[in-house]
Image (cartoon, rainbow, N blue to C red; front, side, top):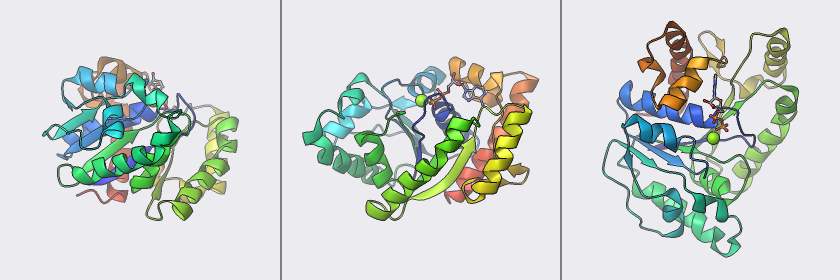
Amino acid sequence: MKTLVVSNQKGGVGKSAIVTQLAMYAVEKRNLRVLVIDSDQQGNSSKPLLKSGLVAAGKPFSEYLLNKGTTVPHADFVLLPGDPQLGKLEKNAAMHNTIATNFRHLLASVDNDFDLCIVDTNPFPDIRLTAALVSAQYVLSPIQLNQEAIDGIAKLRADIANVQATLNPKLKMIGLLPNLVLPTPFQKNNLRDLAQHFSNLLMKTPSGFAHVKERTAIAEAQSAGMPLYKIPKTSARDAYKELSEVFDHVLTAMEVK
Ligand SMILES: Nc1ncnc2c1ncn2[C@@H]1O[C@H](COP(=O)(O)OP(=O)(O)O)[C@@H](O)[C@H]1O
Ligand SMILES: [Mg+2]
């Protein structure tokens, strides 16, 4: 099993949308066995996945972090849903080591049951994110192309480098994924600047640097709890074409099955 953490300290950049759509794509189009872990108490990937009817739901994710040995359902597509308790773990400093150990134990215990584990994360760095980054092999960071986000990239890179140096030398940055990209000159320039300064952090796909445009079909798919490819609209087909190319790149980079 390969584990991907989808992380960025900013909210609203599309982490949960990427997690949800990648998971459904990997199961239905690539025939992979997928475990989704929603470590955000907002549950923004849990809601659409539960609505989709495609997943078997395990216990609320905080139970796995607090109790070693909480069992995972036997199925090819499983969700461990986000729950309100997750927001309280940071204050429970006495449990932090246990939480990190239990996360690692959970992943090890299902290593043969899934091909891919995708972890959705909360916007603020805390023990949940640290525990995920310590035990995962890959990280993907959706970003938006505004100045503030671009200014934050050096810090994001330093944070990942710090985890690699101290806690998990095996962690690989798959890359930054500009999302919600608008066809404005400002954003086009920002993407060009980004490519110049951080080209090694961007994913190169057959059609250039990977990015995902702002597409209402993606927001619609998320609120309907559906994969993009089941939304019967031309705009959804275009969005799917773009997104599936990005997903193929991510899965190839992770050497999933
Ligand atoms: N490429 C996109 N085009 C249009 N809407 C998007 C896109 N990516 C995400 N969204 C929508 O933007 C909102 C925020 O995305 P979300 O995945 O919840 O972000 P995060 O998990 O980073 O907080 C959601 O309503 C989501 O459906
Ligand atoms: Mg989210």
